[in-house]
Amino acid sequence: MPYIRRGPDGSIESLHRRDHGGMEFLPEGHSELMAFVGHNTQTNSEFGRLDADFVRVIEDVIDTLIVKNIINITDLPGEAQAKLFARKSFRERVSRNSLRLFSDTQFGSVIDDTNFSDL
View 1 (cartoon, one colour):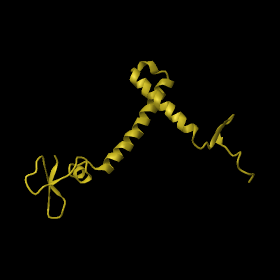
View 2 (cartoon, one colour):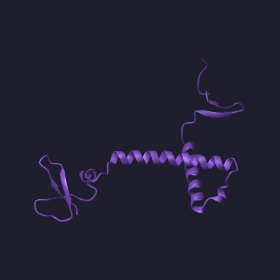
View 3 (cartoon, rainbow, N blue to C red):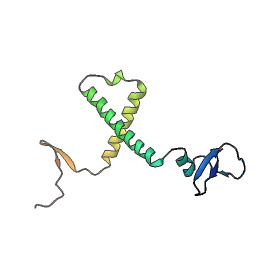
View 4 (cartoon, one colour):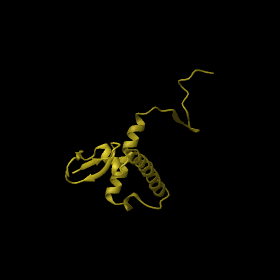
């Protein structure tokens, strides 16, 4: 599998397990085959992005619940604790290596203008 039969316009017309004569073999995962069965890579990447954004929202909700003492981190299963700690540590490592535009002062976070000249 999968063997295909093409229509007059060259697009996939049908999908078969065996070659019934005059069929073309396409390897599993071929882009035309995936489009024919309804696996659109653009749609999948959009869902992936939305899922990643939603995971961040859930992570923030969990953090808020912990800060407000509604739940304790130890109330979560061990696997969930490990995943949360892994994500937090990864985000902290990434943010340490990123451009820092804000610095902490007694007035809270403000734009770090130490490298700018007087205007």
